[in-house]
Each structure stands twice: as C-alpha cells, then as structure tokens.
Amino acid sequence: MLSLLLFLLTVIAISLSGVMMPGPVFLVTLAKGYESPFAGVWVALGHGIVEFPLIAIIYFGFARFFQVEPVKTILSVVGGSILIYMGWYTFRTHLEITKKVKSLSRRSVTGGFLTTVSNPYFFLWWTTIGAVLMTRAIRFGLAAILLFVLVHWLCDLAWCSLVSFTVYKSKRLWTEKLHTILFRFSGGILVGFGSWFIFTGVV
Image 1 (cartoon, rainbow, N blue to C red):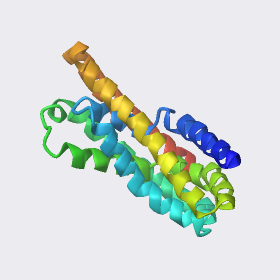
Image 2: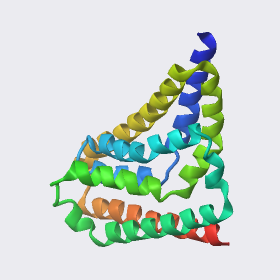
Image 3: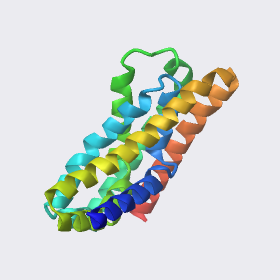
C-alpha cells in the first residue's frame, strides 16, 4: 500500500512538472480563460479525449509505433500546421473572440483537443516517460492503472482550471490593450510552436 502511494505521489510530481510547462494547451487555456472561469475544465476534457485512447494504445504495447521516424515526421508536420493555423486565427480574430461567448464549452473542448493532438512532444512524452510510469503501474494491478490515469488527468484538470479561473477573475484589471496583447501573444507563440515542430520533424 505504501509503495502504491509513493508511486501515485511520483505520478503527481511528474504530471505537474509536465502540465505546468508553457505549451499549446496552456496557451489555449489562457485565451479561453478570459471568457469563462470554467474554460480550463473543458480544455482538460478535450485534452483527455486524445490522452485516454493513447494510454490504452500504450497499455496494449503500441508505444513503439509513435517512435518510428516516418510517423514522428508526419505528426510533426501535420501537428505543426494545425498549430500555425490556430495561432494565425487567434492572432487575427482576437477582437471577435471576446464578443462570442456562445458555444464556449464546445470551442474550449475543441481547443484542448486540437492543441493536444497537434503536439508531437505530447506523444513523445507518453511513449517515453508515460510508458515507464505505465509499466510501473502494471506491477500493482488493474486498479493501480486506473488510479494512475485518473491522477494524471486530475493534475491536468487542476492546472487548467487554476489558469482559466485566475485569468477570468483578474480580467477586470486588464485594459483593452493588455487583452489584445494576450491574444496576440498566444497566437504568436502557437505559430512559433507550430513552426518549431515542423522544423524539428523535418530536419
């Protein structure tokens, strides 16, 4: 029991160290958080839509598939292209985004899904660090595997929720100029991530 608890604490530490690093999911949570304090919940759900099936794939032994060079290249190019488009769209339509609160949950889920599926380093993390954690969880049995998945996703949920809640509650202090900077910054960084993913995937 103590060994399992120590393992889960390790999962929390490693998961938080990964999710708290600035990346595409963080940026979309930042942008959506301006519209709703609960945007992080929906972003985390969109992230989970990609993550849960991937964990199942790794569990059944297909982690090596994502380490094949042609597959990594395709993930980098396609994912990078998606991020560049999302960044360009966010940068270009930042004023319209704040006026459209309709279908926020759907758009936040989509944002979480797209920024996750388009990030090749997300797949790299799961086929390396994630696979190692999965191997250790298997030693404790099926219940431990389910706990591992749940605890990992709850770390994503907690961080995304904190980010969106903080942004939403502090937005009254922002001027229109700061708001514009936020969206343009997020859009520009997404384009930067996308370009980097394509470059590293092809070169």
